[in-house]
Figure 1 (tube, helix red, strand yellow):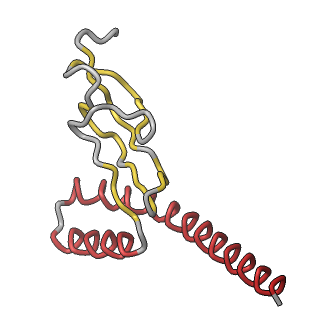
Figure 2 (cartoon, rainbow, N blue to C red; figure 1 turned 90 degrees about the vertical axis):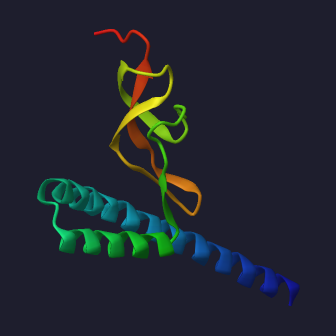
Length: 122
């Protein structure tokens, strides 16, 4: 009986792992759509689109997604990718090119950022 109980626990753990992995794959694909929605909103400034984006973000956050706060923060190589350097406060994020996200406190996509340097090389 103990072996059977251990087998059930192991199978249940594997089932949960694969379900989380599947959700991460789907949410990762949805982030590309979210990026496009943010770009559209930046150009159109449509209130209806803003409401839709807010609903979409709320649903994703209910599934465990959270945005990585980067702008103005000290550069963190674990949760951020430096895509460029620019004049600014040394080692602090000057601009976020693409938002980063965590899913259940695991980095799903690092933020793509521009990091400040006192005298950036051209």
